[in-house]
Length: 216
Image 1 (cartoon, rainbow, N blue to C red):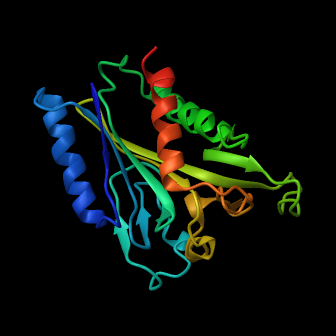
Image 2: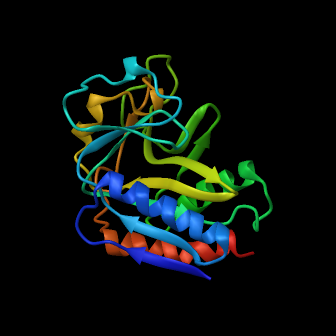
Image 3: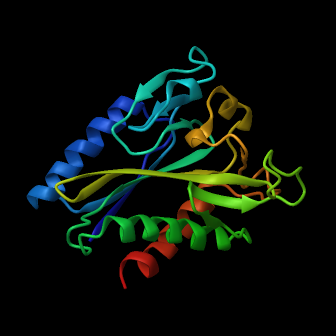
């Protein structure tokens, strides 16, 4: 059984980390169910375990939190749905690569409910949207913008951290970092793509698409 938790307003980042670690430990001990936690954070930057300092363009713009998740710098803030996944990857096959692919597939199938075609690109973590309406990247390749970021950590085969999907955040806030270390492409959101989505609608789509992705 997977418990779905939705927190209103914005949630302090360090509080969220403590709660994730507590829940992950309880799942590993067999004393709590798996959980999906849906929330928003106040504006902040997080530095994953592979973050490069030069990618923090404006270190004084928002609070910066070192994070135990994989990946580089990312932004969280209002209008972005953060999806923390506390799932038993051991019970699901002990295959981290497949688990990440399942997370990617979950996001892509959810976005398809809004008429958005998400893509996975080799060497670029996250989910991307083609933008033929924008100038090509510096290297001449077609422009693509990131709409969702993925970064997880495992402890005793229990995952925590997870996914962030841009619904309608202030996209200018991403300019204080090089998101995930990728300079040649940008970021987008459902609102930026002209879609009047809201958190409740996205949450419903995530729940509907979860079982077909993880409960084969």
